[in-house]
Image (cartoon, rainbow over all chains, first blue to last red; front, side, top):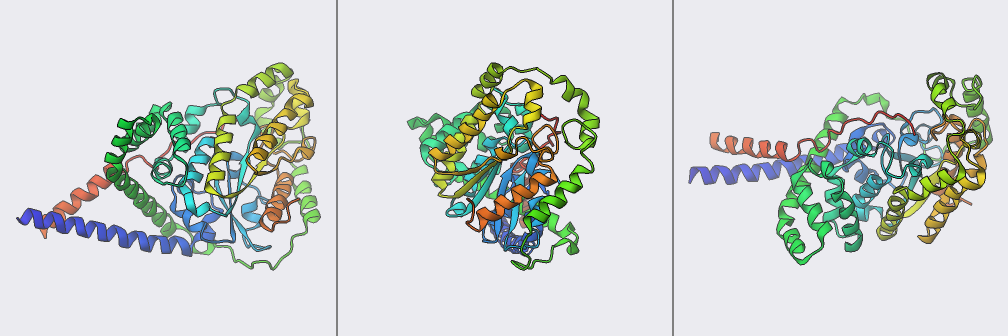
Length: 401
Length: 33
């Protein structure tokens, strides 16, 4: 009997303690949300609590992407909108190499909190140029989030057929699922879809929910610890809507700043980048033909990722905007690919997005813009960022043409 | 009290095991495309 009493007391104290901590941690996250929203902090991308709290603030625009969004620039939306000059700041969710499929799992995990919410997703064209994905195993290992996947599968917002298709694709990556045994069984049951698997799914539900709660608590513990270590004076002073932005002046300033460190190479990209990688870049001369380029692009599994992302966004009833860097015309010519070939990327992205009623801004009118690109890997220069910022501002204020 | 603390320690241990490695992803060193 003493053991029973002690075990029950311990379980009660444990649950009470975790519930109280979760409630308190969420309040602390909320108090620091503007400081966290634009920060480069891995737990924000891999967990959920920061994103969920941020989505309660209508003046935070979520911006999902990959390395092009993660990188630093004085003209990056995270800095330009930090004090909400036109009424909003951005929540960035982006890590180097994030596969679009993981972005979709993340959005699916946010579920109902995205209903009616504006959300921006940035695409990187090179991701569509590798049939089997470029370093996909490494990119998945770096960006896969068990709590996103489990939450998506346990939540009822996405339709069962879509969840089954997503689970079937995850089963092809056993190394990721091996990181969490409960998740692995849940994913395999969801992928199977047979009556036995459904039975197994229902039998596993209590354990799966418990596992998810433990992961969500761990997320709160990690974020809470991070906040305790954050410098208190790093929070930007917000003065919403107090400072209208002079876009032509910003374009001129950003261009002048970048031009000064991008004029010692033939492409007008960052000189430091060029000095490190010019041998690689020069070796790309005439390495492709139009036919090869189109064949590679057509076979890329990223198109399926993109289509499933669009489908998920529709089921989530979000208001998405798809942004994409263009291809850099001088570099494509250097590689041997004609505009008629690489512009098919623009048409296909637009056609797919249009099919799902999603707006796009591809910046293809900047494909020959000399200082728009930080490097030859589709990263955004300071000048490029000002145009991205302008699009984000127009989207947030419903003035996007 | 000692028994309760013992069971609490077990529960925290189970939690640590159940969440092990969930948020410790290796970093992806960007090599470009």
